[in-house]
Length: 396
Image 1 (cartoon, helix red, strand yellow):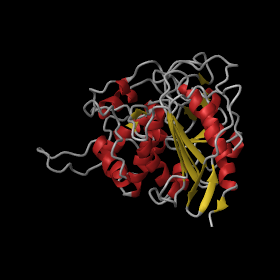
Image 2 (cartoon, helix red, strand yellow; image 1 turned 180 degrees about the horizontal axis):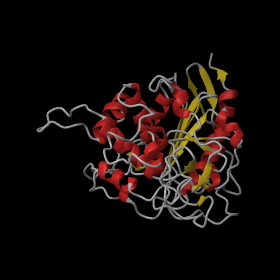
Image 3 (tube, helix red, strand yellow; image 1 turned 135 degrees about the vertical axis):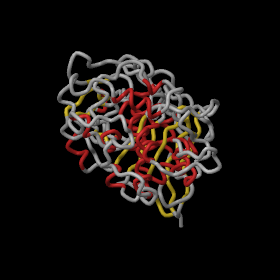
Image 4 (cartoon, helix red, strand yellow; image 1 turned 90 degrees about the vertical axis):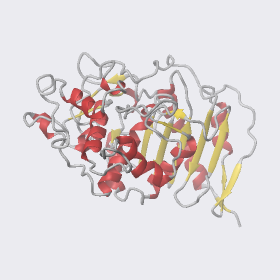
């Protein structure tokens, strides 16, 4: 894929209409370095040959490893490329002090978890993407356009919330409950503040819709937590484990800092932690197409042609699905794109390419400019991975 490696501010600098364009959302790291800086060494020594043999084919990863090594803005990271059929990785590389089992904050790479959980619960017959917020969220209004918000809107940044992603917000208050946080978001001015923001009318990237979606999933579930007195419905952490992490063997993935206790109001859009080994399991499962049977619904663009408010400045050509971006060079190409990704503010970036048939992960933690760097390096890696796959040779 030949997307330019422009600066990507997926969680930092936003563009859109109105006087508030360019605000910085609370979940973002500092702004990217000034334009003109280069992340690649001017002079690079010749790279040693690096190849792997997997599934009867030999892959030459020399160029990919060299690109990773010469990127001066990513001093530490773990990099994985795999496919849906071979149990081993096609490429796995540790740069610096970043092991495959390092537990790392994901920032907005957490959003793919929310979409995955919703699709798994839909697959189990518990929810539908067309579900309205009420009655599970009993406080939800029955008047105005806000009453028409569906689960699909909340997961796709088209709910009509997030039109003004101000600093702060109840998603950053772990002592609340998801239910009460969703109620706080619901009570934000909506029809009166922005009459045009009916669900499905605007695309606005931010945390509020995802938080509401999680509250709905938790409230909609009717399964009981075993061994509890009094008996109660499962919380979002238990649902995530039941439907996602346990089936995939993701033993070090949580929607909170594992050094703390599970919050009753986890930050769904940006508060998860995982390891390279765990996250690669999710990517492999999504690429395989059986973990989520309806991948077409899960990965399709849902923001084409909509008014854009507070969207990632350097993802202006990309559309949004359910917890992931649909990558494309121009908006018109997103309708047929097979690449979905979920970048995070600290550079953690995972993606699947259903056309070429691989998944890949940049696992890193960069305190400054990671939101830009993750996708910048991803674009470089995509071309090199495609070339390595296209030029693989039979091993016998």
